[in-house]
Length: 465
Image (cartoon, rainbow, N blue to C red; front, side, top):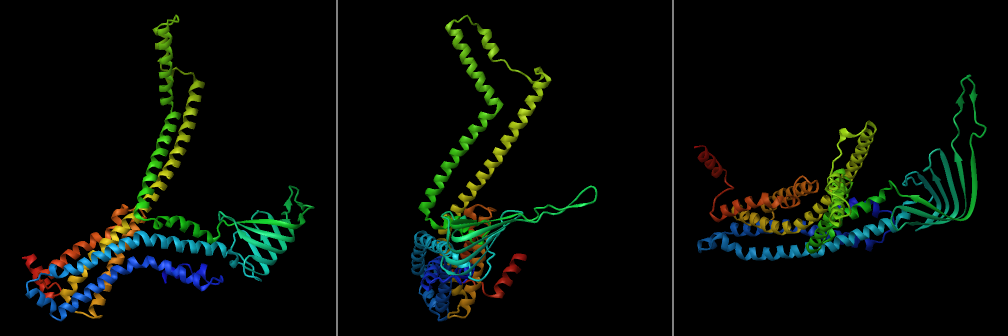
């Protein structure tokens, strides 16, 4: 339902077939399975061991010499199989499902863009444009009126008897193929001016305008600010969800290699512009030339070598030369600062992209481990509480699952905001729940009544003493 209401504006009122909507929801539901499996494992383990404890079957097994760890072993093996299936599903099936439903949404928002234009109604969805058609369906319209306010101080109206609407391949513009129409362009009235002598001067051409007709024309409308552009951003943002762990590993290696290549080139370009490195290069080249002339015996001596390696200091320059040197240095520093800022943005984008890949990489493994951790919470709790059925187990499972969901949401949010490393954000719920699982499993194995208030009162009194 959360997914459905998020895209309700793109689905309703556009004449989309029911089969397309069902297919979209089917693919989107694949992403819910990794969220539903932990709850299913938690609830079923609480109910199973709650029934065993309530019917004294767990007591009989323990009295025959079996420990809780031995009793749990068959179910633990089954949970491991389920966890491995979950990893396979999240690694191979969910990326394909994500790609499918993103593609369907993309197709709906691009091929059904003409549906936002309702015949007989002025449409204000496009920034700086108002469009009205008399009749039409799909992308064929009749009686087209376009009011263009994109140019300041100019009012442009386009009318056509018929036309066809389609979207550019890059998604940044709409095109109207118009037939049999005309264009009226009017400048806004010129404001009267008050002259120094107090009189009001009014322009004789107060409202210039022109009208031109056409048999066929193409009219381009930019989609800047149009809300359907959000799909492009979402599509690019969620690209990490469409890859498995092997593809993510390949993508991260490729990004690291490209980033190192760009950083090395940037460092070399900065060095090539820096006066110190230029001077060193110039000095080394002159030394080589002078040594070559000395070795060849071309009436040169070592004084040329010393002259070539001499350093010109700032205090030896004239006043004008000093001003020129300072101005050049300032210009060079400003240029380097701009380049450094651009490079910082480039590095931030690379790191953000890498974090997105690592979030999805760790998510697949953390989900598998979370199922096992929740099993070791649910099974011992069922044995301790001793209640089966759909009463207490459902309440316990719901409360624990709420805690689990809050933890994974907090970890995901921190990882997406780059507050913590991606691996820590994705494994946050497992790190918090693992000690709880260890504690309740140990308590159930040693028959410690942690569900008794008297036990905790005695424990606190013992700690104080």
